[in-house]
Image: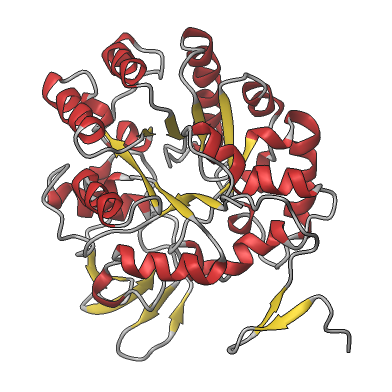
Length: 387
């Protein structure tokens, strides 16, 4: 057996770098999470609404286990045939420990494993995240900020102060009230005082609150004015999770195309692998999405382990090659969605090695761009380690 491309680190065999580089590029995860105990947050939307938001967020899940027998039950207990939260099933949805949610139907409890089972106390402190990143060779995690976690601006700020150069926090705003002066002031403090570096904008709350507005609606103009003033990028989550999911996604892409024309000076990232995993095998990556990405200010988070079941994702590699050919490697940013991705898809290291070791159609420079250089450039930080 030829061990020339491996070395023993005392605990396992590790792949050597394929070639010596004059400078080593940083690896930056464009989609990472740390959080206090889920459900404990007081900042942000009302905790009761957040729990209902979790249920809405999980409406398509079918990985349930009956608590009393341990039997696996493949049923979508949370699905409902409208976009109105009032129509959600009344199942006493609640979060319990070890990354689980529990529901009760006809006095029978069922558990859903929606996060990694080693999520003790349903929290992921920065120290755990740094340990995970260190083992996988990741330098920085960009902290996306969905409302189901609460408003974590202060939590992110403390993590960045305690562990400089390991995290980049994104701030949030309650999108249905994005023109509210109090919410805008809070967003500004999140960035100016807590040193978060971008805005995470989700369309899902617009669906949840039944607010049918376009991304270019004048109600958002004060938000974009503030974003421009603060000189921060926008990270878009464009999945409303409505029953007409594909049509709604394409509507959002059309709106984003118009938004980019109005705000060409605001950099932005389409998150979660561009097209939601639930519909990518229905619509692929439409031309309209590629067209938006061709704008100089628009970038894409690559998240193919969510879309395909088998490592190292040959179908995902084919799709990544197509994207590289269409828009260039300089537009693509690797993200893992850890720790959620570790529940369903692969290990953290595999989520990187899918590109780092495989994807032979990419040059070394292109891999470095996707795995960190592009993210570093977006936030104006040095993409390389010092010699």
